[in-house]
Image (cartoon, rainbow, N blue to C red):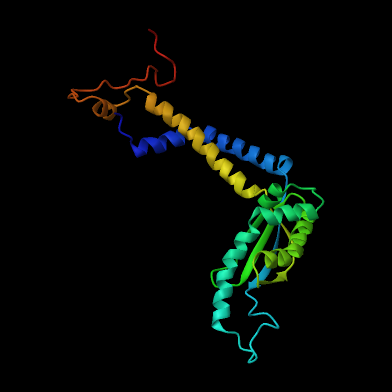
Length: 238
């Protein structure tokens, strides 16, 4: 088996530097053109709600006005259940109906991301992504209108408050710079890989090191390479 010499691999790269870089540029240009002229823009809007077991809400607190640790613990456990409810298909079917069945519930469900804010928080973060900036705001806020009643009917004695409505929209895609750089790297790698495969399949013995790496026989000598030219550049006659 041919042993790989890192020096040779580096020289292989340098000897084909121009076509390798050209391949990277072509891939990068294709990715940039796709992101700029073909791919649809992707937008995101965010909202958040606060969930508790009712013991933290006005009218449910003790007469001392002190919130008990048991209510806090119960509310923290309740957050996970509420996240599961808000990721279930039922609420998205209701949302689709409220939107006049303009969207299927499955497409709505795919556009939402519902998750805990962190492990020790009563907040739930809601993110909606889509290609229409105005529509995702409308969808997100319609969802927020449904959530308190839907969660309250599904999990008794649960209080839900909307903390932040969807009022800002951010463009999150396509990630033109990232994809362009990635395409350049992929183009360079693929082109170099092609040259590398040709290098591995080549059976030419170039020097004594190649001979020793291929054959387990002693090398008695080598034939030097002679340039068949006069000093002035004219070729010798045969």
